[in-house]
Length: 113
Length: 116
Image (cartoon, rainbow over all chains, first blue to last red; front, side):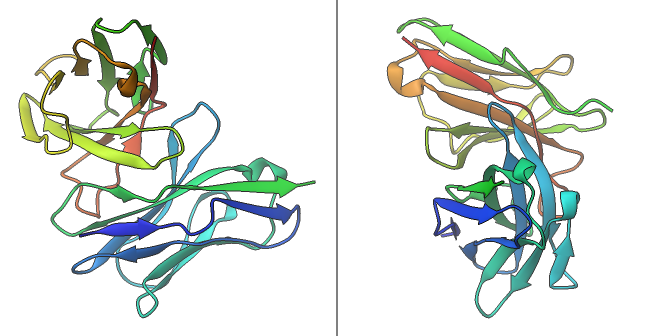
């Protein structure tokens, strides 16, 4: 069965410091991986996705994620965090030929001024 | 270019009433997906529809829940005789083609249903 794990419920980071939000997955076949961000009382905004090709994917608002097949991970990163990055981040996975996104439980990112 | 639109944003119902949630996909998108988010949990797939067709409703409870996506108008998620356990955020997503990785699902702002 496909699954996604976000091992940290919350990540705190100081403004200006690099941030990492972790995601690991389990699928049969090649994964398609996504990151979404949810601000309070808002929907999910698409940040970036990995389908194939370069393992480092660049997305919106300066975020990037690295696909690591051997570790089955897709961690979200940003070199310098902003207070406005504080939100709930979701990792999701699907595979070719399917359409159900399997979501992790989310990681709350708090960037402290 | 308007994104996925959902209404109402907040819906309060008493136990036993009906809830109707609407979703208008992005322009040019003909594939709609509904997900439910319970408090402190991730989103869970409910149903996938194309115009006038339900493709997969495997994530939907067998009773009281139904969905449609008519030829004209928005997709509707209908919950009959709501119970407190139905309280959740319901998100709609759309894609241009059948989403299998290359076509990203874009999400609406959600409808937060509260059952009293």
